[in-house]
Image (cartoon, rainbow, N blue to C red; front, side):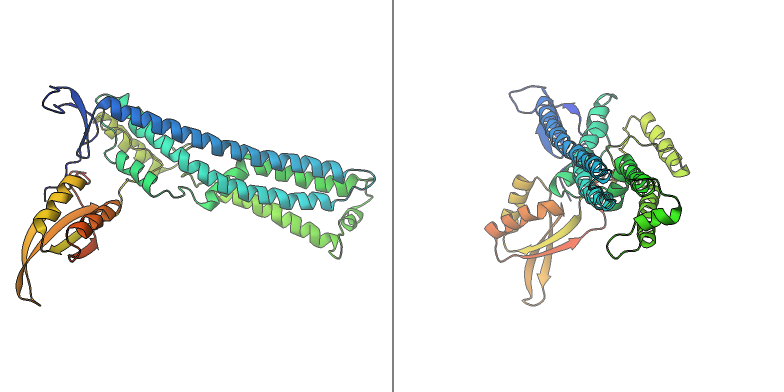
Length: 361
């Protein structure tokens, strides 16, 4: 199968047209682009992603500010000599928890843009600083997958736990201490623990039961902060990655890759490989469809001769390997050339060589 050649991006001395001589061009996935054009496009994409990440980072800070301001206001009202009541602090605890959920969701969106920025920094810009320019072979595929099919790169638990450890655990500690101080010291110091617990009575809820609820809630938050600490899929964080033997193996592998000058793949992403498919097209117009696929999609096609047993007539079968995002273009070509064609799309476990992953890896 003569699929288009995937070349690791790098400038090559190759004539881009008969009249341009040996001007360097950028060969990437079968396309020939001048290095300046490719780098300019990447720089503009990088600047755009940085702008979006900054916008979501500002939203994160805004949510934390809401929690801090609400906590300060609730404590001030609770310790008011005339109308202060400890229930204001408990209502504020509910509001702060709501802000934490909102911030965790915003953090997931921020991480989406941040992961693209880190991918370009680690696999493109860092690769340019280590001659010869040989970044990870799948970095372009990873970035394309991220752009075509955006999805959260970190789980809800990691986002929630990370924001809890960074900011909200301290807010909860202040809320808990303020509530205890309100019950014990205000408006006058309590003479015993029983009196403090009685002051916690609210509506028809006994003070002891309320103490157990608040204590259990704060303990649960502390456990979440601890249990989610090993989750380290966030690309925008400065994280220690030398705390396990597995990380040691990754470091050794990275050192070996550096010796071979093949670049170091970013730790926060898997290999970028979109879903791959093998397509069989049974058509009466194989030459026209093959020509359009070669010209429009820059993909190779293999022609197989067969026989339809239902009609006992000769049939031509075209076989082509594509990624999932290329299938709509193929359907459009078939719809225009031969609407009566019979098409079979089968998922492929792996496709190597000829525009896909290298065979030697």
